[in-house]
Image (cartoon, rainbow, N blue to C red):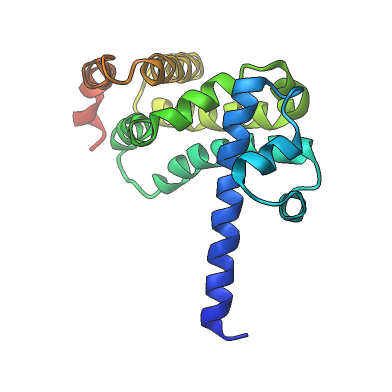
Amino acid sequence: MTPRQRDANQARREASYNKILNVAMALFVQHGYDKTSVRMIAETANISLGLLYNYFDNKEALFKAVILHSLSTIKGIYYGLEAMLSPVEKLENLITTSFKIVRQDPHFWRLFHRIRMQPMVMELLEAEIAEFRDFIINKLEENLQQIGVDAPRTEARILFATVDGIIGHYVYQPDIYPLDEIQAALLKKYQYHKGEHQ
């Protein structure tokens, strides 16, 4: 097999994988975990059941992949900003980039926001979700501590909950929710530290 053929095969696999994840998420949201079958996912994605099982061993594995894919996207944002020198700039970009990816695909994030509230999520992914939450809060705490915010751990928890709540409101009303205005007000809270930490 030539390198070009290998690349084409890899691209097809990635396309099929992402299609399965997107279809699965939509069906899990619409019908719930228990009422969504692997066969239903395959039929909706217009692929064979055998092909789906080439990617995922069972429904539980597929469900986990849906959620973890979403969480890894968010974590990637935070890792990507590590090289920024100013703690205030890093904090600002964590906030604005979080809102940016939600703006790019509000439908996807509305589905994610709904699906993570289902009881099966905590049963199957309690450890992974806790690890993700702690990762984000630790990063926020580190930046807040560097810019001299009082009680940085508490402030990090408040900021995490605030951003998460804003996203939740936006994805249900993307056409009318004043995200720019809310973002500007949130960023303003940390502006007075900017001159001290450039």
